[in-house]
Image 1 (tube, one colour):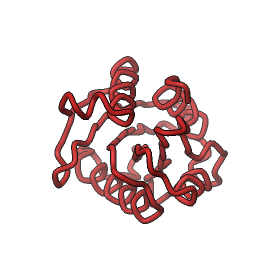
Image 2 (image 1 turned 135 degrees about the vertical axis):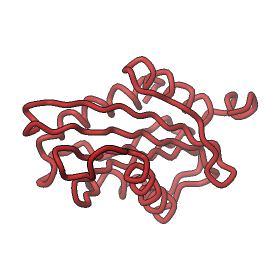
Image 3 (image 1 turned 90 degrees about the horizontal axis):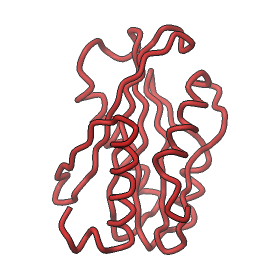
Image 4 (image 1 turned 30 degrees about the vertical axis):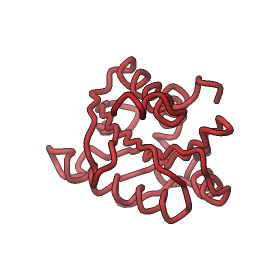
Length: 171
């Protein structure tokens, strides 16, 4: 991310998220996704109470000009494919799974996009995503914070990581 991007509210928020991820022990790096700088954070964690599984948690964040439902939905699909393609090791479902926080930040946010992110966790076989929509003009973070039927064993972990990574700069 260049100096101009860091000085925008969205850029400052992404820098905050990068600091939070690093402080929590995530490996972080910046990638170029079709000309858009994208922050990628990753960590893996094994817990017996998760039925002896390892969860690979990806956080993928980008600043965009505007967030709509198609934008966050499409980004969520991209992040899930990226996580599956880069996880490595055993295939998902064999004592390991993927969790992801696809995060978009902008000062122009369609309220329907916030509602979409807050409505539910998105689940595919052994892969769970909690999309995050950040309205940098209102300093509002929208994401699902409930207890889903599928993946319920991981719910408190997602809640804990979401609070640690995305809240704090007035959110």
